[in-house]
Image 1 (cartoon, rainbow, N blue to C red):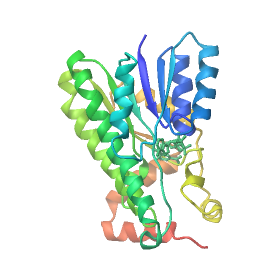
Image 2 (tube, helix red, strand yellow):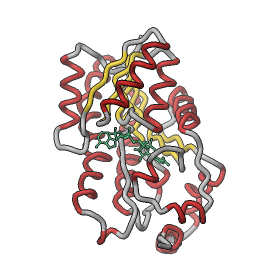
Image 3 (cartoon, protein in one colour):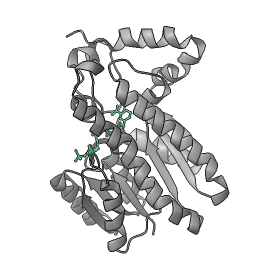
Length: 261
Ligand SMILES: NC(=O)c1ccc[n+]([C@@H]2O[C@H](COP(=O)([O-])OP(=O)(O)OC[C@H]3O[C@@H](n4cnc5c(N)ncnc54)[C@H](OP(=O)(O)O)[C@@H]3O)[C@@H](O)[C@H]2O)c1
């Protein structure tokens, strides 16, 4: 039986990955900050399936946190066959007025921790010539996003980094995926400070995290480097920018995302 390590497993897309991989009889290592939520999920899955579920409580927004997670994995004698770098956060509003600490923590969580954990685990996978990594980016990674500038830039990093690793690791028989969800039902929008009014006005259609997970795992079977999940509208939004000058598109996105509050 294989083992999957999932960051941000306490809710949303990460918890949905945990449930689906448990159903497929993966052993699990669940990582996030919310100890109680992780323990509850771990117990639920241990009760339902013949699998081992480990919990590692860690704030990945802090320096060296990912290396500590890796050290704990080694101390417990575990090997990671599937790494899912899912933990992430957003922050909505005009950049100059948002908290500087929050922007830097977001860069650390969305980029540095993902790179750090990948750099810890990838060499072992290369040595075994087996393993997979799913890095959760976003459709926000395909273009700059005014009022979510740092978030979108962080996801552009994840997308570019993951595609490069996909090509680097073909000869090692490894699968690397940039998972780019469109709007998905989770705590994300609330945590990012999105005003409810904007959600309603734009009629954002959210898909369930379970669907994101199914699409991602189907893409992994085919070793697709980039998997976009969501509605037909989501796929249009991803492909439309290539038909416009960048300045025109970014300006349009700025008007779309400007808060009415
Ligand atoms: N929902 C969407 O529409 C959407 C669209 C595109 C991409 N995404 C991406 O999908 C990923 C998962 O988000 P979600 O939608 O499932 O939202 P979510 O329900 O808010 O889940 C975020 C997860 O990340 C964990 N996390 C946050 N800060 C952390 C930290 N400092 N250290 C460790 N773990 C941390 C959270 O756990 P704790 O709070 O317990 O730490 C939680 O498990 C994110 O990377 C997000 O950018 C989401």
